[in-house]
Image (cartoon, rainbow, N blue to C red; front, side, top):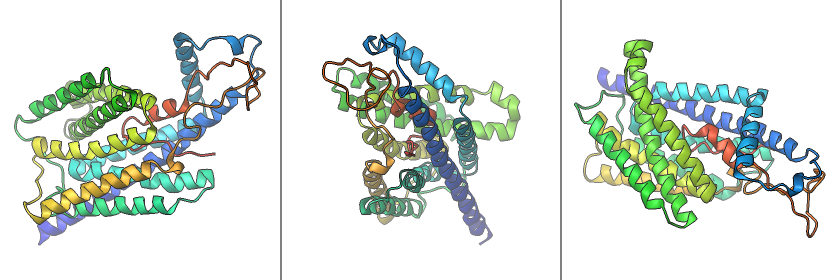
Length: 364
């Protein structure tokens, strides 16, 4: 009885800490997007020099101006404050992964989308549609089905099983390389989908490595982090997942990229939890059906909610061209204008590569 009560308290703590991480994630995304949108708007409204409209937006110039934009963000108080909230979200997620299991924490991080919904409504002044609320309810139902399945969600974290961790991680990383190779030569939408799936797999690997890193920090301290390999591999995986996600954003719609990543991440996390951390599989029969049904409901609901106009970044797609002289609006016939050298749809999600569900909530 005492063991059951302890398990129940442990699950509640893990769930609460994970929900805090998801809420902070959504809040930081909204703040960073607002800061980036304001800065981009001010830069687009600046008067242009006589030859600016005719200057081609070369790759080198785009990179230079994009870096200048990112540097300017670092001096923006709102962006810096939001980044601190983002760092707090990471700490909370790492704590949840240390206390709990991959099969509980990663599916719950999908609630970032739910927290983004009211933030987006406040920022835009628009109300969520009935479809938005239905999708949000579907996410809750899907999570409830998965997490309430008997033996499907381990209450607490566990050490990696024997020597299975390295082979499992190696197999998963090989699958990522295969997806990237397979994406070459494909159409833009297909390539975006394949790269998004690869990014989702890497996010799951990153969660497993975050758990290992947090465990090492607790048991061995800072010295253990410096001498252990999980932290270094986590940094490499984070960079790779960032690159894949940003590439997918530039080739397909944000909704498609987010949906693919958010659905793949908890699935692969569950597989990693079972294969490398000894987390239990749901019992055959009804529990297995319940867990599968929950994942289907969760995936469909995420796909619907990710397409909500409320959750699309402000200025989705290409920003409106700016006519010579810095005046926004329609460009006259025959006037050639320079395409903006940066796109906040790509720059802002860069700050949220740690978790795929963190698409920026638009704020006016």
